[in-house]
Amino acid sequence: MSRIVIVSNRTPGKGPAAGGLAVALRKVLADREGFWFGWSGKLTDQPSTEARIEDIDGLEVAQIDLTRDDHHAYYAGFSNSILWPSFHLRLDLATIESHWYEGYRRVNAQFAKALAPLLKPDDIVWVHDYHLIPLARELRNLGAKNRIGFYLHIPFPTADALYAIPHHEELMRDLSRYDLVGFQARRDVAAFTEFAEHQAPSTFGGHKAKAIDFSGTAVEAFPIGSDPEAFAKLSVSPAATKMIHRMHRALGDQRLVLGVDRLDYSKGLPQRVEAYEKLLANNSRLRRQVHMLQVAPPSRDTIKEYQETSDTLDAICGRVMGQFAEPDWQPLTYVKRAYGQPSLAGLYRLARVCLVTPLRDGMNLVAHEFIGAQDPEDPGVLILSRFAGAAEIFPEALLVNPFDTDETAEALRIALDMPLDERRDRWRALMDAAMAHNVDDWAVEFLDGLAPDAMAETRPSRDMLYLASVA
Ligand code: F6P
Image (cartoon, rainbow, N blue to C red; front, top):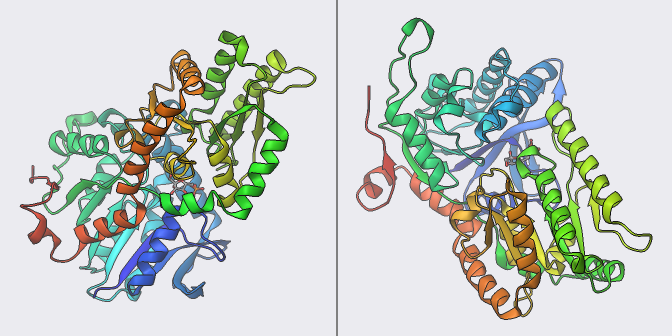
């Protein structure tokens, strides 16, 4: 059986894996031979030319160091100040410094140079996320003939946002060098197809780029999931129960409205707190009856737009406190740090409502984890943005437009007043969908699609899209 080589910007660290994805991919590598390849987390004066191979908790991990300048241009620059905002349709927050592209390409070339000598001819290579779009082309330039797949963990942009990205045409050409490109949601496949079928308009000078041939690239939605049954177990573990007791002591009979997100402008945090503010303003009976807890660990905090989001959130939370707090009652708690999964599982289980209201999101695994952690006899209600990939698989959540804070405030009221029978019925359907989309099946399906004989075997039977050459 072929080895599996997983490539991502960050590699799994020592100790228990933090996220469902890391757990699932570890499982892939426990069942099959292979290794994980990525950045070591170290910044050095000289870039590594060879990878260091380490055994991390039984997993073979090959890592390279990056120089500080390259890392800045590749990670904070091109990946997170250009690709991230553009893919999330926030061109207003993008910083278009096209010279970062050189660092982005240099790091991808460095990844390829260090990875290529480790590859055997029949290894299957699975590349993750927007940091590494050019990797297949760089590997192919070095002679790699392996099956190479790419999975995007964030949304794919609409054509207009794509055109605003410097060198977007080259990036699309890079994608055409993968055998399989996987997206989170059908909307992402549609956006990609829209570009592939019509391609970029000519740029200044009337120059028309040669059309890209996608005929060798299969494109499909593989909605990622979590391990809802593991979360169900975790939610009754001693650590989760400890958190539940702690919160019971603090909250008494108040119902908990919970949000858990990285502190990122795509998560719609200011709009969410504003919706909660409207709930309290419109429904005075709910004051002292509810409490909002927003957990928001800081993220990418060297980037100005992230600092500004953090400041905006501080101001809005302060405003809500100033308006509604009493000497003996606080409407909300805002915690800017990360919690382990057992504590989060306890918070999810206790919450009457979970607000997952990103302005745009690839999937959003908080929604999956919240569902997994519910008490089937007394489940909470999920309020979900219709712009999260998760909305395609969880229609029984209360779906909202997160930009419309009146609508989210009303959804909050409905959720808090929802009768137990309806909460149970909705949760059952959500749990069935979460189990049908579990992360183990996700990994197996992607790798089945990437297997050497997959193209021939799957073409007539599976719902994969092969884009005809338009050259
Ligand atoms: O959602 C995309 C993603 O890159 C995840 O894969 C990752 O866990 C998260 O964003 C955090 O990103 P960073 O590595 O920049 O902290």
